[in-house]
Image (cartoon, rainbow, N blue to C red):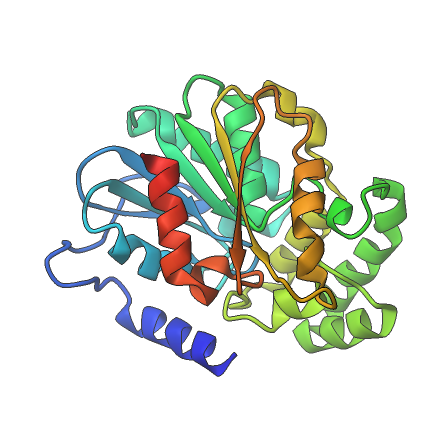
Length: 296
């Protein structure tokens, strides 16, 4: 855990800096009240989208390991981390953010980019690929499900999770992160696999309480499984996995395969042994190997 925090601190302290010889990050010339995009490099376009309460900092290590072979576009959602919420301060978040990513692809004239999205970012990638078939070359979701409750119980419905999502919304907006963590543990609440996966990893960088509360509510209650049928791009699903039968991660193969069963083209599934929710941080070498296979 401490190692993850140190990695995040290094990424944040580095700011716009990057590995030697790979070129500097620059903010894309794209005016948006929903997202910020940093870009660097040349080659095939690759968009990386972070998860709930994370910024582009979580992708720095992955970006550096790609070795300048791609034109990288790192998305951050306004209201996460230190970014002011601007347009995300009112109303629903995820649909509007996905629309801005689609607008970015069109206005920047990206040539059928590949998309990698972690957690909430994976759900955003699903939306983009479903709403713009033919404009996305391929999609990778990282420890992300089209309906997160299905990772807890495949029979779960939106109605089942709605009361828990309401508690989570109120806890974050009015009491803060610590209260949600404590209440979640009291209720046995699992968010994308386990409560600690959300709050105990370096990915949780905080942000505006209202944006965090609304985004978490949407992540928990929106079921995108019906949208999978609209995706024409090949999909790779990456997730943490464990050989320990006492770990919830030992069941992820079955759960993720079930979650993506509605894809018209069967997905490629890559379990990463020894990883928890922050797969790209927990097992960077194994993760980048999966990314290279995905992009080949």
